[in-house]
Image 1 (cartoon, rainbow, N blue to C red):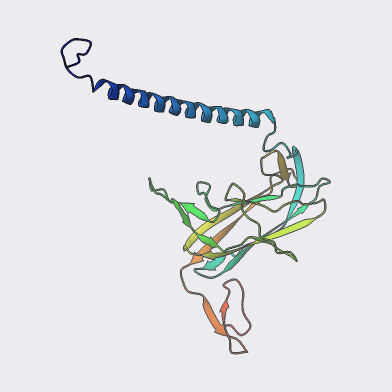
Image 2: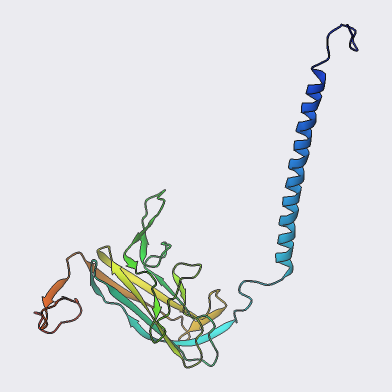
Length: 245
């Protein structure tokens, strides 16, 4: 019988498989390391390319103050659950320079993420925002011939109304439905840009802001029958012809 190196006569069949297994693991480890190095190198190259451009997200936004005037500010102070309402805000560029991005920010609660919601103070909630109003799909829209949809920006509370030339006025409308009774304050502010470098100011140099105090009733809307036999809803802030006071 052939003898192995120690002369004990035992077969050395187990040695080769063990060495082959070790070699396989070693090759796999080397391949994994190579893969890690390749990914790291690609990320480093990408970051270097981004940094080498030397540009900032707000580099195209001009710095300075841009005079504006709030021409429209409408939102009913008395509302009812499930009754459609419209928030309307209009702004005029009273300065001599073009406003590249006229922005309007709306907030019912500074701690909430969405404009028409309040934040629930309970801890560990997956969705802490509680809506006061539900914004209809594809709103707000620019008022006028185009009626273009104005999507929110990266900040859900801020809407970019686009470019506003000197002397030009633009107006937007938000279609909402109250879903939470109570008394609330809805605030808004106007900016001349999206990154804070271009600042909108009023005639006295202050920031153009405003707010609405709204009471939402849980009572169903009052309806009447008009002269054509149609059932219509009487708005709480107005009187329909033929409606009782």
